[in-house]
Image 1: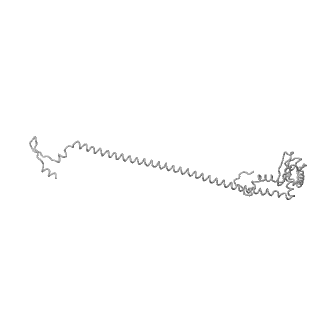
Image 2: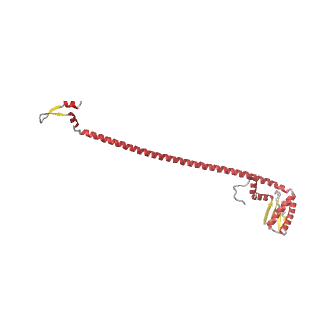
Image 3: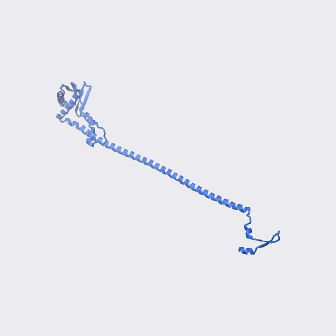
Length: 259
């Protein structure tokens, strides 16, 4: 209904004071009608509720953002701790594996070295044993054996440097030893210009089981020089061992000192 239509239907009211009718506009009265207290309170409550709700949503949003940030920080921390723990475990296992490998390699190398050294020593022992078995064969040629005995006795004479010396020998070598003693005494006098008396000690002969050689005794039995074949071979085993090893197995690259 339009405003013009409302004006045609104005209500005539008689004024109680003047007794004249007055025209009242219903639209104007409705707008200017004062609000009730309940309506105002309800509006304020709605506003406050909306404000509180907005504040709560913003606060919740802030809490959610902060919680997410703290979660990411804690997650990164846990991931870093787990990663460090895994790295530490791996490093520990790697070191253990490396050490175990080194120990195994060292053990194998030592065992191999010991086997090589054992095999070499067995070869040397077999050579010395073969030589020892062949020593007795050196006495079969009497002429050569006499020269060897003379050299052994002469060596003792030079060492003793005494006027009287005794020689012990095998009983079965008595004849060849006497000739060797004469040769040694002549050479000694020729070289030093001194006479020396060399006799055979028949009371203490070298056992017949010996391969040969002599024992020179001086200073009335106080000094002995053992020049039997077995003793000379034993000395040779010790003194000539480096040269024999080098001849058989080559030069040792790890050896730093030489006698």
